[in-house]
Image (cartoon, rainbow, N blue to C red; front, side, top):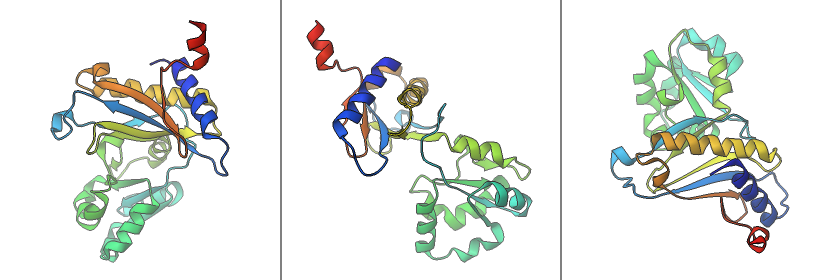
Length: 226
């Protein structure tokens, strides 16, 4: 897969989707083969930092002790101090919290408290603070670089099916930036798949309300030239 192939697929996806009354998201879909996702060694779960914006702000909530309170106040979208964890006894409240934020940061020395208070809801939703994304931090951490990194971070995971789907931009963005985001996801996945590109069956891009377009598929114009 190269940048020109992605650009061609992005342009086609935009064309066939037509104009909508909202700013649609571009998704990258990668179908995998030769993997049994029930086996742990075949599961993919990577946090990938994109070179460009995803086109949508990621909301970040910090679950912290008093050491990081001042920073969390100025950097994050919201924060909950460890002394207030016991206020979240109602599962509905935690579900609401999980729905409102894309990432959760946690202070490492209170992770057991975080797991006890929020794990039963955040865990199944894949939103527990994760060391892979750098979201489990020491009490003296600098939160601003992490917050900025999370704005460009996507999670590529196989979950229960052999495919990966993640957002790579919005339709009002420069297609070059979206293509570079897609390439970054693709190249990052090659490093974690056991048989690299041989585990990739097909790559597609699609807009929210559009049909998937296969990357690398020859257009009618290109076929006519043959």
